[in-house]
Length: 209
Image (cartoon, rainbow, N blue to C red):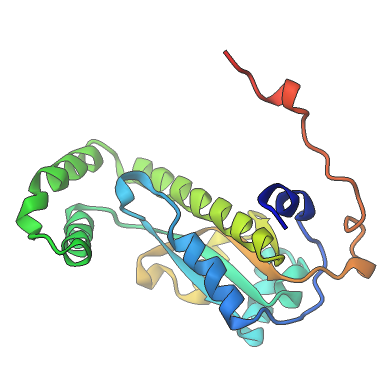
């Protein structure tokens, strides 16, 4: 299945059949998600992958009892970092130095640029910025899942504070921003499984100058 066929095949599945995703397939989706771009490459978020059935059942009320939470193979929570500061940048510079095999001092100009950029933002603005980065990762996860013929349903319909409390995210410096259920469609019980995908036509959506 080529990319466009995979994207035409996918939809926001409402019912899943509980089948487990093979570990290698899930790892491929997660690796593609890890490779998503983010501003400065800073990646100011963490990705929680919840396969444990009991934990997913505990989360379900916080997702207004949407069935995909319990029926999926995994629930992926994208959680923005609640603190983004110079220490965050220093940790990132250390990762660059280690992975590229360069002295961390060689990155001081880049580090200064990033620190200057975040210094001009309020904590609230940095939270909004971090949350936006999670949506880029979510997009990569959705495309990767479709390419593996795994169904993925993006979800904003949940109580973030309740999810934070259930998973102890605040203590980890995290805040849930968006979620994704991964699994396989239950076509017999999903009214959307045979529905035509409707999007704005190219002539109405795309403006070329």
